[in-house]
View 1 (cartoon, one colour):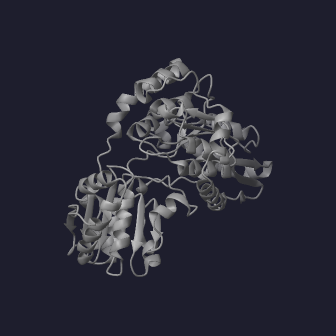
View 2 (tube, rainbow, N blue to C red):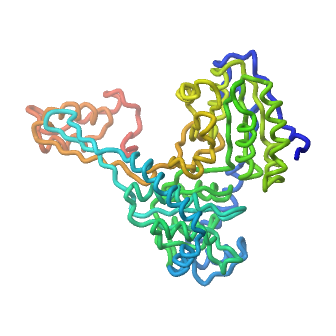
View 3 (cartoon, one colour):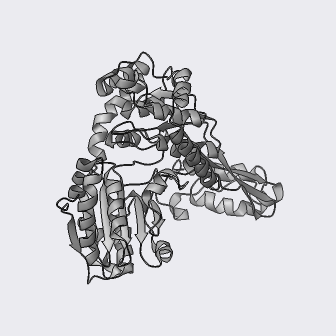
Length: 467
């Protein structure tokens, strides 16, 4: 079965050196779905404020308005979690257990070791990584249920040592107002007993501010739609967040050795997620684009979510032609994809050149869908170009660095003249006094001579209080 090929835009960047293929140059050239979080912020800000002031009553009202479910309580009964786990398909259960096992291996290996240092004789500074007390995980429940997202968020939190973890997922009208059964079952497999039937901005506000049923959390993680991303932006600072994850995306760097069947299948696999999914093929072999078009025409009619795939590929997919692999890598770095596949000769070496990508899948037999489920790596990844500055989910958002400092009298006395100098430069006499009261200087009597800022080269106007 074949159909007319989806018309995917083509951008020819041949003849342009890698050094000139920058984000500034390509920002408006490469396709990407519009994702205006700023506009959505103004819609969700009053929702968050309302939940802050009215708590569970506000969560209930927004749940009825947006999800069509009127709940007496958000907390899912423990017996509902147990029942969902007992009813789980055995094959799905086995797959989830293996996904959990692999994710634990990867995420436990991410735990940083405690470091103990001695910057000077008599001074010890140790670095501890302390888990947050409580974490909240949001799991989408829109077009499909994502039990894998339960795994990807809960496992790193558990590996980090977080003792209290709660999951929020939208209620389903056809499931007695409970989250999807497979979501509940995944929670049961992971030992999560606190689950709330809530989604969208109201769920994030519930987690951030707390309600009578749900204690406030320290960190919120998990993917979602534009309103979830906007709520994260509003609530950041109240709680820690993992990132503003938007529509999914894939870039594929491919040369003449790439199999067009694989490339087409991977583009379809990503487009299946969302009509706004972004798909970019960056190739040094222009003939590959025609071959992929032929494969798309064969494969798309066979996929379950044909209309969604076609909408995504027509909307924000693109073939980009480059002279060589260095240029292809530069184009990829400018786009900074969530997922990057490399289907080319020396794929592992090419991967070492890439700077900006949420996760890199090396070789023809490492599709993104492996990472979505069973590679052990995390599938909660930065989107929309934020891979330039944001990492995929790991144990780190659930940890805080706490330095422990211990200094003896001799070491403090040795460094005191430097404190004198810096405290004087910053006009913070009490800082110096706090040291000199312990180790008085020989001639100054432990005091800092008062002088005007101009005498020390400090601009007029107090600099105190900026720290």
